[in-house]
Structures are given as structure tokens and as C-alpha cells.
Image (spheres, rainbow, N blue to C red):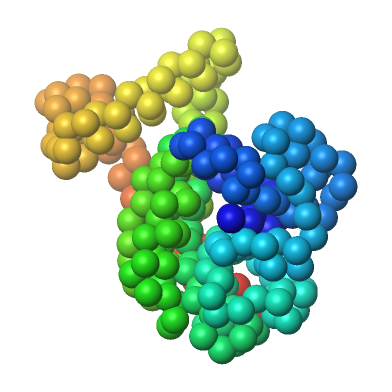
Length: 264
């Protein structure tokens, strides 16, 4: 039995992905603090909604899909009922496995996962890291939860703050770029809908090229960059405005904030 505690957008994406991958609704349970939302998800997916304590009692794998600020209260509720034969999988940004282990019974295995929002369309990038008591079998179980909603890599937990900055927050950077390029298209005289369609398909196509060709991004960029052409003129302006340096600084700031969340 798998329990998803906190059926927000990411929790719902996980439930949907598992069901599409063949998991029976009878093998899934959810918890949700809002009764109306719990009823809606139960009707939509055919899964049972229970209390947090009941979920921890019934499920062998318990996914903590709550916001970081809600984790303390949840762990206080789960601590009396979670035993070492359960697997805890947490997707809360910035909260370490050791912080969760300290709040639970000795020996409870914890696996930390950093997915991102493209899980909603089955294209997530998730990084999985073990806690002190997690075995390879526990990691396999955690990875199996997230493969139906995208790709999975296994990393040491020390690298998860960087993962949070890069892929966890990464979709927001892409959306920000699309927004800026759409505005540029409007400035250049295109209707907003046309500019948006041009940019979205371009971003999608470029991502597919990176994935399918396996080429380094520099190689693909140079293939578009003709001598004295339009592309190199644009890239010169990006470099003049420090766009590359701004991205480096932005990701460092996101990494640092993830570390702060762990401390808080």
C-alpha cells in the first residue's frame, strides 16, 4: 500500500502517474486537509481518502508531499504510528532526511526526492537520495514511485540543494524566459498569441534536440550562429548584459535558500 500525504499538485501528479503505470486504486490512499479537495480526488481517481494516522498505519510506503512549513506538525502526528518497517519518502524542499529521522522512531528509513512540476504532464526530473537507514531496496522503491511521472537520477543528499536550484526551480526559469521572449515578440510587432506559440514550440523543439541528439548545447548553438548573422548579434547583447552571470548568481541564490530552509 502506498500513501500520499498531502494531495496538492505534486501529490496528485504522483497519484495520477502511478495509476497510469498500472497501480491499482486499491493500493493507493491519500490524505488531504481540505474535505472538499479530498472528496474531489477520491471521485476522480477512485482512491480512498483517510487520516494521516490511518495512512501511516496502513501503508508500507508513505510519501510526505506537504509544504516544508507544514512538516513539523505532520511529523509530530506521524511519530507515534510510524515504525521502522515503513518507508518514508519526502519531497519537501530543503528538509533533510536527518531532520525527519530525528522526529521519528529509531531506524525508520527515509528517502528524499526532489521532483519538479512537469510531473503534472509526465515529464518530471526527480533526484533521489537516501537517508541513514535507507537501503538500496528502499531507493528502488522510491525511484519506482517517480518513474511514471518522468526521469529519475540517484544522488548523494549533499547535492540536493543544487538539484533544488537547478531542476526543482528550473521550470520557473524557463517560464520566465518564455514570458520575456513573448514580450519581445510583441515589441517587434507580433500578436501576443503568435509570439507565445512561436516561443513555446521553439523551447520544446530545442529541448527535444538536446535530448535526442546528445550534442553539447554549445555545438547546437553554434550550428544556428552564422558569421555576422542575426543570432550572434543577439548573443552579443545577452553577453553584454551579463545574462550568463545572472543565471549563475540566480542559481547560487536558490541553492543558498534551500540550505536556509533546512536550517529553519
